[in-house]
Image (cartoon, rainbow, N blue to C red):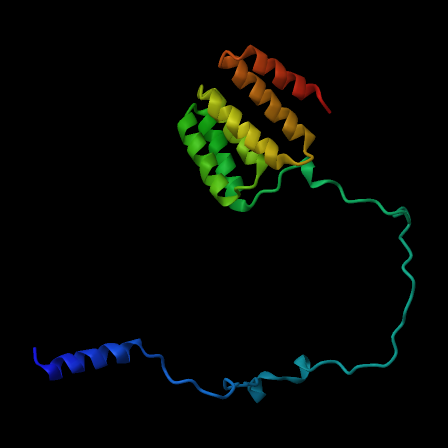
Length: 184
């Protein structure tokens, strides 16, 4: 190659590495307004009044005046529509004896709601029925870590852990899990 070709190639490479020139002004703002035909007298805002009636809140009869905290959400798990459909499918698969498909369906539900402790517990139950005791114990422990104050779910998980340890031949571990099951 001759010098002119090499020089042209170097200049092209340097031009490719450069940045575009900066604009030293604010970005343009484009404002649009709705077309005049879009506004109608019906959609016009109501005229504002200066008078506002202020009254104290009085509870209705039987409502009581004392604060009552909302019912804990731990009573029933909250699931999205897709997860509910997957749970129903997993139940059908378990009833028909297809535990592999049920586990796969529950794993799909967990990909949608990975922090749902009920799903982890359900999968632990399927793994226990499959004879995968170590996996069942780990999944129940994962559910416990996400369960928070849901005592009913924690009890279910400790029961699963006790059954998994017992089936695996770990009598001392099963006794420990049953002891934890009795704790409040």
